[in-house]
Length: 586
Ligand SMILES: Nc1ncnc2c1ncn2[C@@H]1O[C@H](COP(=O)(O)OP(=O)(O)OP(=O)(O)O)[C@@H](O)[C@H]1O
Image (tube, rainbow, N blue to C red; front, side):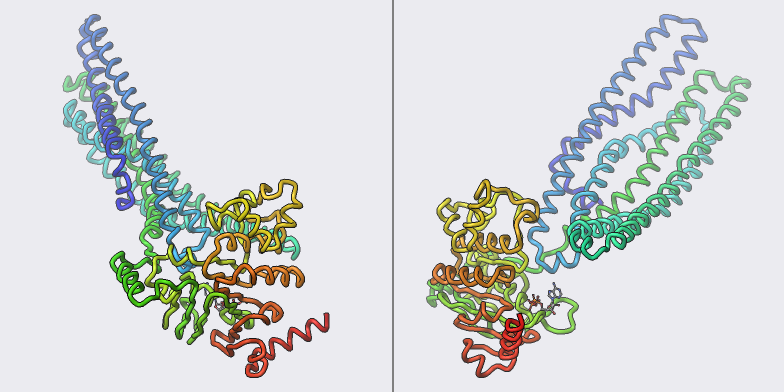
């Protein structure tokens, strides 16, 4: 929590102002009972009206000043906390943007969303209260004790019993509550995950009649969260009655012994009244402290989760600027500078963390501009993984991936990715117009470039047929266009960039044979100066490629063109024959 609060640095003046204002307000609150005691003992007892008016007016002034300080402190603390929340959310967002897929896999999307929203709100709420109580509560407590002792030292002995009892109760309850607060945040993650899966998978859930099952899953997660929240609230609810009980008993004690002392002439009525107010202030400040005990563990559970994200160092980072410069110099010297679109895999091996089998082993090949390299293989054979190594979504474990003769680990990620047009297996579109979605590939693309890209991607006809053409809105997740249309738009997005290297990850799978063939013919003309890597399931898609890599369980089972592979590769022949027979059956 303390580590996270370092983010308050830009707000130090605001924090200082709040602390000073709360200090002034507490001073005022501590002064008021003494003034009241004076009114009673000096004004009322002696019948001095002028004194009562004078001190009364003074009391009003002190109370008014205190109220003003309090209002401004509230406003400032809310502003500081809101600013802190905004900054922390931005920090987290920017940090998470640099995460590699490993880190996303580790934390999970649902948890990252809860951490960026709910957890930060928890800390923000507590911060607002803490700013006000951090100075106010201890001051009221210590000041109250000093003032009470100055009113009547003997009567103050009552606090020797009361305060340890209260502190003990707060401590015990706090200890019980802390683990539960941690559990609540974890359960909130689970609830978010279930909800997310439910919402994104609603079509599958309905078609498989699993609504009942999903309801049960949601109810279970919801109940689990509620049960824990009730449990923690039960414990916390116990705190208030205990405090009130102790407070009321101490009042009885004060009134009883105070009465005796007044009878004996050791204490005046006004002083007893002031004493009672100080006792109240002391105990209320303890209640405030106990509230902090309730809130701080909750916020620190959240702070831990936020720090876990902020402390996570992305595994893939850019080389230092010195190293980048050295690579650039070396490139210039040995003539690699002019290379555009060369991709080389040199004995590459890679395993996903925790996986028993490597996803890729000993992969070597090279591709040059103007060539089409196709990758084919059974499901799970490592095709998508192979493509992900080129934009450096993952780092190789052995060997090297080189683009334009430079190891991708020695390049700035931005430079590397600016060379690449990646079309993912599952097309992703963003909320906005079709125009904006295609322009995502190249911000300064002209309208002509966008139309050209759409034409090559075979998207122009269906986009033009839409009522608003390129200005038609794409709904969240691209749910208002078909799977094949989504694929074509994401191809257009990559085309508009005119990258050196195209990576098509099974991007034609949702297209019919005719559109697939037309698209590939148009692509061929468009990509004469680029290197194209295509992952595909259909033999018809890869047959014309200059080079076909056949993958089997992460290994190269054959490499060559269609004719060569038909002669030499058993695995390729199997794939071809299985598809041909399937087509014949169809
Ligand atoms: N994020 C991941 N974490 C762990 N293992 C993974 C991950 N992604 C893929 N794998 C595993 O790596 C292997 C290769 O997966 P990959 O997605 O590259 O296969 P693919 O050939 O593209 O399959 P498909 O044609 O079905 O898309 C599979 O065994 C898969 O289970």
